[in-house]
View 1: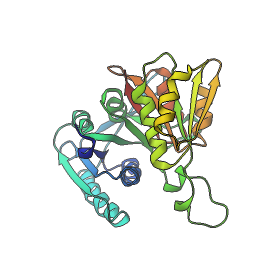
View 2: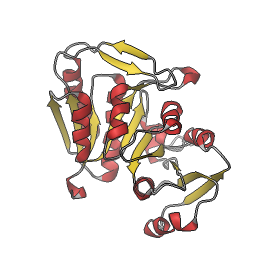
View 3: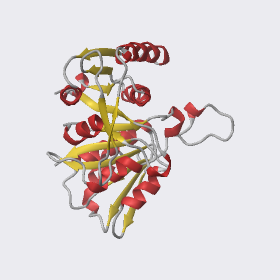
View 4: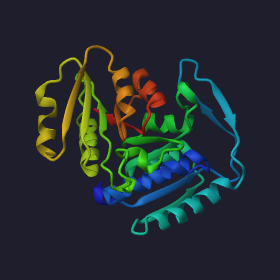
Length: 280
C-alpha cells in the first residue's frame, strides 16, 4: 500500500488514557503530515472489560465502561482535536467489530497505531490493557503505547528561560537493538521517527554492533545525530534509565510472535511512550 494512503490511527474506548493517546496521535499525525483516524470498536452499550498488569502472574482486574461513554468520548475527542489542530485531517469512525480484530484490521492501513495504557501506580510501573497488549503482539505495523497523563511537553527538552514548551527541541528517540536480529523495519522506524522530530537517536545494544548495521541508515538520514551505547549483558536496565530522558522508546518483536519478556518489562516500566515494531 502506498504510504500516502496511510493514517495515524488511535483507538478510543472512553478512558482517560485513550484520550491522552489521541492527543499524542494528533501530534504524530501533524509531524508526519498524515490524516488522523479515531476508531471506536465494539458495540453499545459497553460491556465489562478486563485490564491486566504485565508481570509473572498476569493478574486480571475487571472494569466497567459506562454505556454511551465511548460514543461521547469519540465525538468529544474529534471536536477538541479539530480545534487544537485545525489543519489536521481527522476521521472519526465506529465499528461494531470487537476491539482487537478491529484494531488489527485498522493497523494494516496505518503508518502507526496508537493505544492508551493506564496511568502509573507508583514504583510498580503502569498496567497495560489486554486489548493494547493483544494488538501490540499481533499488529503488522508499529504500535505505540501511551500512558495516561502524557503531556506534549513530556516529549521535549524542559524549558528554563520562559519560552513556550512547544518551541523546545525534542528529547531523544531511544532504540533497543538486538545485534542478532534482522531488524531493518525496526531500525528504519527509529531513524524516521527521529528525523521527523529533528531529534537525536540513541541506540542501545548488547555487545558489539557490526558497523554495517547502522551505516546505510546513517547515510539515508545524514541530519540525524546518532549515539551508540554498548551494554555488556542485559540492556533492559539501561533502556529503562534512558526512557526517563527520552521522547519515545522503540523496541522490536519478531513478526508472528508477541513481545518477549524483556520487551514486556520495558512496556510496563518505561517513563515515556513505547513503540513496538514488528520485524523480520
